[in-house]
Image (tube, rainbow, N blue to C red; front, side, top):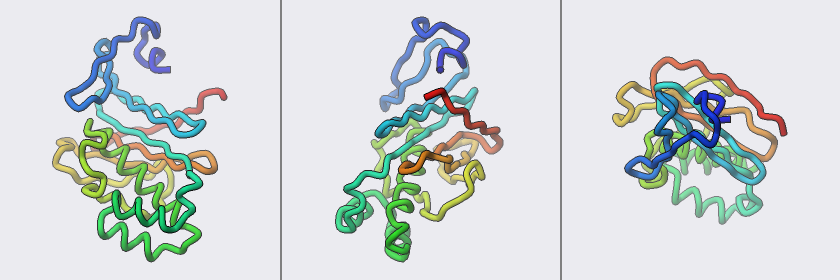
Length: 177
């Protein structure tokens, strides 16, 4: 799929890693990409002239254990997000946690930081949003600003994308199964 966007055969693509390990194309012009996989799903984000990050996460059975979910939440959520999670009805907590997690990881990937920056330093929020209705992300590392999107994901998954820039067009495409 990436070769189609780059206009080159797959075997012609040359990759390198940024300072913190984010892969990028050496011969793709302004083409930027982000890749995530979880369970049976893969998510590829592609942009021209704008950094981006994507994340997809499967709803793991271990998250159904309230103690495990609380332990993870304390590690990766901000204090405000943890408090919001505690106020969330029990039946919706895992979904709320996964929304926050995918938003955070997409954000950090867009910055090229991955998990080199602690996720509990990123305020991503838990509340659901309509898919492809962006939220403006404030982080001084995004010189041109950034937009975050919750993506429509298959049942049992959550997915998010972050794209650098104040004005972007987003399109969701599905590859054949």
